[in-house]
Image 1: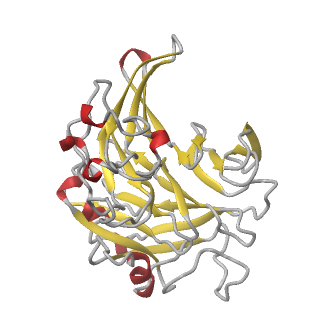
Image 2: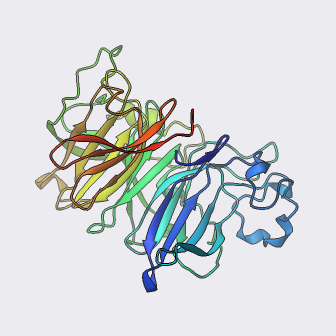
Length: 357
């Protein structure tokens, strides 16, 4: 997703800073064998300049994690970058993530690589990066209670402190994490998977070759959540266990965004012709508590155009100030930023003419 060197992609979010400056926290979707994109030099010759304690996975000094994040401080008045620095080191394939209400960025590993063959630790976790203009490396703490799976993005409900998560798998689930202490993710919590109430093991993908019932467009479905045991999933089986227990299945959940008391997410190859879907989730007024059943959360298949001329495999999204959506394509050839107005009108906003991605 985003701008790329071969096999390397970056996703970012901006935060306002004093004096009108903007802080960008940039992910790096890089593997440890991609030395061309290493912040430590092509042959990692600069590795010794960073204290080993700031790496999640040092790779025995031979294959350090090359994902992580970079923080950029930009002044829109002067149109200049005032500073940039490495803010998380030693992780793998940091694909997306999401901002928190407490001024941090949760960055997500899109990998399930295990320790071995030069890799010191298991991967597939979230990490939290403080938003600051002062050069600083984050403590590389894997947020293990949030689950080990092929992460993509997160969104936080500022009212409840609940964190929602997408899984970039063709048969993935939608998860939520209820922290023990809101705003303190490293202190642990409960991992749960989304269930469509009254529809056990619902399949939302709407693929033509499936024999399942259609997940209706613009219909409201009530939602409940089930606890997930063994969230670190050494067998990479969270999505299978969740589905067997009744959780709903989604087609490559990717970008996710909270706005105006709703959580939106995209499913890149959902729909009859695999061009993408957008879902909208409205939390319960008692979200994350024992009273949820009094007023269950709601789920809606918000958009499914099934037309590549309209949108081609939406990958990430944002909500515009007027309540519209902005979708980022990740198809073949040229990709566009595609807008959807609050009235449901589609339009092409910008073209990313980089060829195949």
